[in-house]
Image (cartoon, rainbow, N blue to C red; front, top):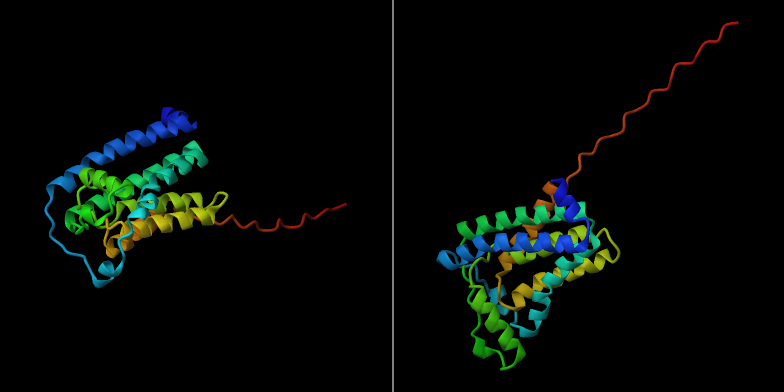
Length: 215
């Protein structure tokens, strides 16, 4: 594993590692999304009340920029730990996709005015089917990155960014409300398990007995 730490000692190496990890995890993602039929319907009145805001696709896709920020700011060892947490979160989400398969009823493309945003949604819908909803892997990965970056400069802004990305999954009509809550639960749960530190209380030093000095 020493070679992996050396590779991730610089930004370019962390980008390469991220690219390989994403390429590997996309294979089961697409298989599940393309193969499993929906068995659950998580749509609620709250979901239908949330407006469809095509321009928030900019926030939704900024998910990748947040990961780049993590690769830039975190050192190699910390970034690999974060990437391991992300892979664990992905595995949990994949299990959810299999057990609770649901498809989001996306709005038709012709409901978006012709132009830039319609083209972005056309590309997204063509490459990513309406399944793989619960829990949201988009939310889980984003929040995990923010939880690690909150310890760096502008930590509150990283968390705010993650919250906005999470909300955008609702306004671009990619996820149900329960998906977002599930993604947040996965992120916080994986973070608590993966980054837990065993609190070892320092040993209590007993005062040394007085030394008796005899003439």
